[in-house]
Image (cartoon, rainbow, N blue to C red; front, side, top):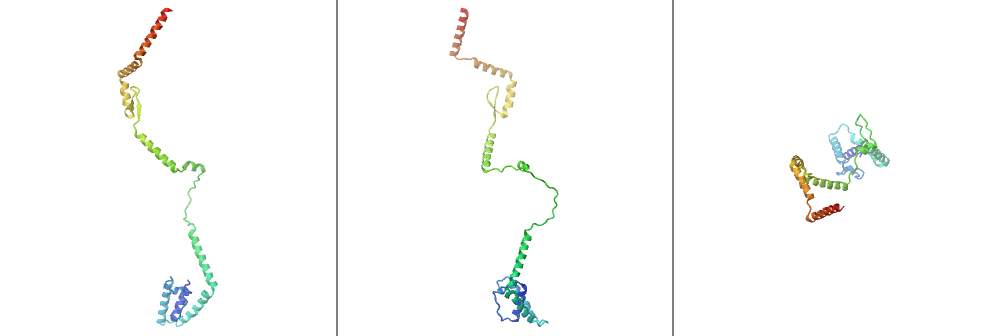
Length: 217
């Protein structure tokens, strides 16, 4: 809205309070309009001028002439109003464009680093999929459970399974006790040589047969 139009209508309203204005053309006369407060300020100022007999006696008379000229230019000549809308639209577009343009911060480039495809392949890992993530979680759980179980080693002396934390001490004790080691070896040999009664009888018969054959020859 042109401020000059509001000012002129306010002057004319002071001069002729009984005149009714077209509220469609001058929508700022409506109290709900955003420019109504500005109109009221002009109206009050010109009312004070008229009440105090301002030295310029023709000020209100000139307002009539000015109002008529503006009315003809702004209302009766649509091309003028259209041209003003175009100018306003142009200003709005320029403001939007200036807002969207990147601001020059005045930075200085100190060094430029070039990245190649080989660098990207080496530095960037392949994104993990949800199924692979779940699978890795299960593997981690099973590995953790396995690590919680105690590790066992088979003893070369006794053949029993010895916990890993006690294996060194077990080897040291049995390795230094030579008598114990010899006793274990003898026991193993006896276990191998001790046959049951049936097997011993068969072996004895074989020995006798071989001896008889040797004497006949």
